[in-house]
Image (cartoon, rainbow, N blue to C red):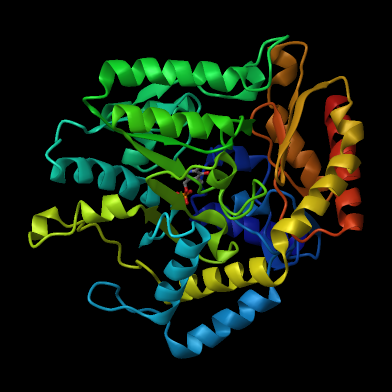
Length: 447
Ligand SMILES: *Cc1c(COP(=O)(O)O)cnc(C)c1O
């Protein structure tokens, strides 16, 4: 049970705060956890109870809470410049960050446009695509293709290319629906088929759609390698290469939404690297500031940028947000990139992935679990139930039991997943794996 301090804060929260992604009435029985501080992979509530943040606080944290290096960088930046508008002005953090990110793509995506959250980055990429076609004399190319189960955020434009009925239904009348192509989800591979079969089928479906509709299609938007919100649906890296070829053949932009899968989650800094092709537009957010501050950006290829470069104001990309390129957020992002470099994070993560995968074997082998899978440092499996009644409320029951056992975990439907920060040592990995299995056993046995 929650102790006095936490209870008090949770009660005040429920009187004044409208929490995201929540049916508030459910908090009548289970109050929110009042976090007082964080350190490394741990969050502590007001009474000193701890929780291992095994989903990186909604996939944003990379190097732990109150990271010493990012803290120092931010304190230094606070003394220099907290914010200045980015129209007509520029500053060192935003320039240095753009240069570094561009270099990470071998300068294939050399133009960075900034915003504050993931959904805005998606809106920007969609608008850039349509506007670039319009400037090129193809105003009819203004429709989008997204993937079944795809998730790109919850503002109206982003929701229009999101295939999650739960999030869409109440707003359907406000949305401009996108065309939905089959998902390359590797779980659709049939017995006897090779590993790329589901991706090949999804590409064939995509080609049919493009053949029929290419005169109207501005862009195809996808989450490379892992459709995270769609229950960590993982696919073959060849899919992106095939999709790049289709987009070139049929004249559509390719937008890679790397908001969740970017920043090293899939084993490379950008997920797109594993397919050997670059999209025309790439969205980043979540982990880019190490989980410290809201920042998002769209990286664009030169041909997109040039489509706007003109004497005519109307041909420019006039989109803006008040906090575009905020210096504090950019500085946190620069320090995040410096940590990747100085500490050989991607290499270290490969070792960590082996350690945690090995420790998770008892869960992977459990007969009540199917499709145990991993991409980079994202682990997932699907829990198999006898019937819908047994499955009902699984994710809530699991999250609750996890919190009782010092774990922050929130399954997506029947999919149990881990997306921990990149700083767990072997002991913590072992502890995490054992606890996850304990929680799983307790929930399945109704304890
Ligand atoms: C989280 C997410 C978004 C939306 O980002 P917000 O910052 O929550 O608006 C978009 N696309 C993907 C793939 C995401 O995981």
